[in-house]
Image (cartoon, rainbow, N blue to C red; front, side, top):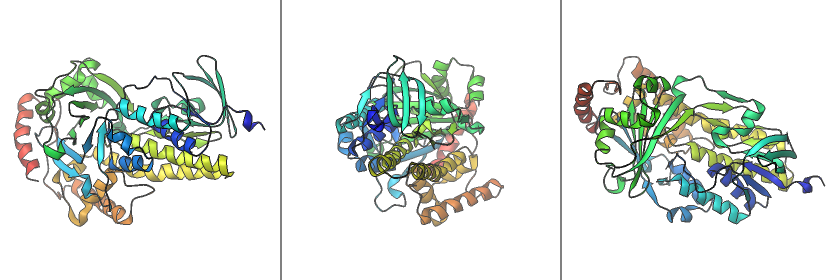
Length: 445
């Protein structure tokens, strides 16, 4: 009887693509779901590049036709380059080790996030926005109560935290901890521009990652006109640059030959937006009365564009577990255990790939473009997101072989030609020299 008095079966904090996906699946499953969100939609957000598995997920959710009606760019692969070059190594997602690879895409998050939330509302989800949860009064199985900043009280059987970096439940329970890996503590400087030079033909939507000792740049074509450009720096490097935070992107562009070349005729703001990408995790990611999904559970690094996909697939799994619990009387303890196993098993591959990215030897192997036993295609398959619930055996053993090859390469037994490190703090003359020699090395790899 008490359960019927709740406002909702499930209350979701956060209406981004993670929270909206959970709401969509729950509502379609006949669960009474409410979504509390502090922002009015549409709203600006970064995280505009999607991996191929994200396209598969949208198709499974029945949202691909909606996506096609929005301004976006097909993304057939990714380009990796050292910052001192003028051209990088291109990888096609079609070469991933899967039978029917999906095509990735780039899209402005304002349009994308609203699309997913609209679908959830149409399915029957209730939205409470703009509104912020001020207090969590009760947090237990079958007994959740929250209070908004306006004093409005809502009750539910379960709470899904999809608040991203705000980690509402993580902070409430004191389970949020920062990761101590220095490479996973970053600050991002970014903006949107027009007239940015792109790759030609069907490669126009290619994501470019330009690497330097202090971090990396992204260049993401969003539609026919707009390109997202960003610089991710370690805090120490940002401090050494000595620039105002809102001018740091321009400082970096001027010092990086490949990005400077692509931005030669670009138009856009002189200042940039800033966001701290400090990595953290919340453990456990599911407990009495709650599930943490997406960035509310953990945040690693934005380099491989995995955030939205991880959040959405985690939201689907959480929603499916809660449907089983609420509609079919399944065990909530078993649901939590399965969810935590899924989060651990699926994220370990992305985490390892991100850790490898900041190893210069890894960058040299990637820029070489090929390897024995198709190890390059195995790395590409993980990069494309085909790790759920875990990669196929043919991918796993090749990825492990790649890691062994990297260890050999780093022991001064080069398996591919060495490449000079590129620093944003090198002199202009040194940068220009690197650009000439580096371009030749990359284009002939």
